[in-house]
Length: 347
Ligand code: PHE
Image 1 (cartoon, rainbow, N blue to C red):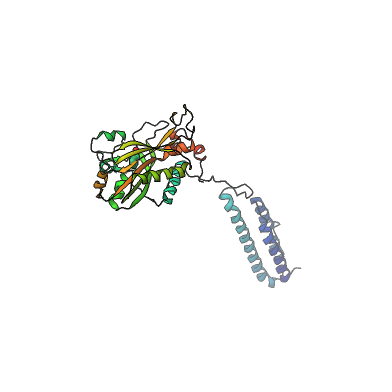
Image 2: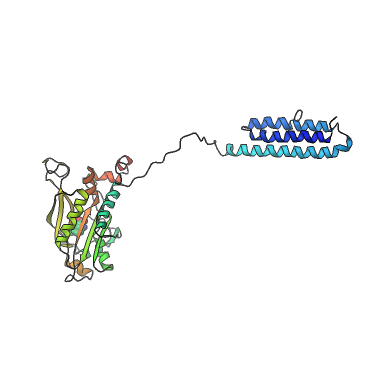
């Protein structure tokens, strides 16, 4: 005949097993099985103990009843906790499989035009130039008039312009930033201005309606054409190699006088192929426009041309990058085809 201490011992024995058994539950049917084993109406441990209680001495029954009720609640709470732990991950979706390989994120890479822009910037920064920028939506005044293009002057026809209204336009070159900088700042000035420019072009392998330029501007006392020549030659040789052949050709821009276009030797054919597709058999590739700042431009920004002189240049980044990398079509830069973009890497 069991007594109260025996009942208590039996509860304690089950209690320590229950903890282990709860921890071993993996599936809803494990849980069901465990619930039956403890709380099953006929053969559950808890129910069996309630049966045993009936045989106890009547004086011990109230204490035994309390003990068994506490134990039953304890079992119910434990099983409820296991059930909650089991349901949460199932409801949240499939469990993670930690043995699966991770997802690999592709490394980004700088766009080839950006790589070139940085290269150009770093060469000019070595020479003490600063970097400036300006708005892509410009007024007629900055894009043309202050640069010495009078209204209706035929020189404007060289720049097929996208107008927003009579006064506003998308800048056709980075030169308007020369004016903005000289209005703000007195010489000495030594800057480059990389940025986007826009022209009314029908896209083809060598034309895009949007492309990139780098402008350069130097203003100080006693600045001469020799400085222009020396600086640009140094720049182009840093970019393309020490031995690069460079030539200056007289040209015309309304805002420089005298003006020169700068050609470099064709690196595609080594100036040897009369049928070369890159240079058209001329052996030379036009790379930039340049010249001494026109005195009228200085007057427009209140810099005294008797005291100061300067030079400027403008270069198409796309064109230089195409030449350097052997890219046959300017539109590749803007197609966003990763198979193209991924071929270029920062040094
Ligand atoms: N802005 C001119 C162009 O777009 C290039 C240039 C810049 C020429 C500065 C001379 C001086 O063609």
